[in-house]
Length: 152
Image (tube, rainbow, N blue to C red; front, side, top):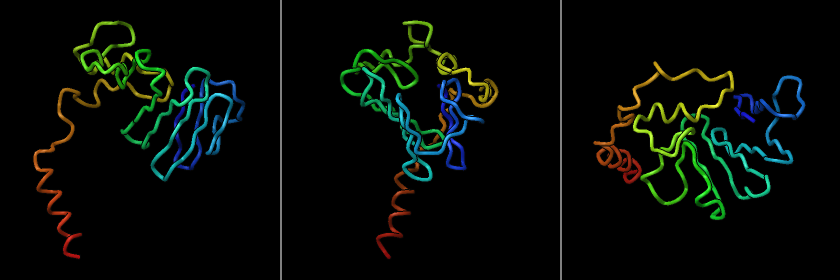
């Protein structure tokens, strides 16, 4: 199933056998295989309830942060956009079609793209070889903003 959240507090689930007139379900959504909970206005958590995958969860901020939580019983048996879950950083960029690391991050990311019909191809959206964030002045910014708290 492909899951996407809506700003209305609903979740859209496609490619599923769960009946809904328009594919929208109110959160929290609970089924036999997973449950979707809204932790806050920004954080959504999907808990997997499929045999063999109990304890696995995906936390998403509706933007760009994704955290995959997996039980240790799945160590050495997972791979995807978040790596291989085997404590070897050297093979974290395995594309969906190969057991050989992909040097080009854009090609690696696209290999895991799900055909949901609602996502645009990212070919012209960004240069993945550019560093998206500049942390060179992070200490200065932290001191500046923390001083406001310290002097209050």
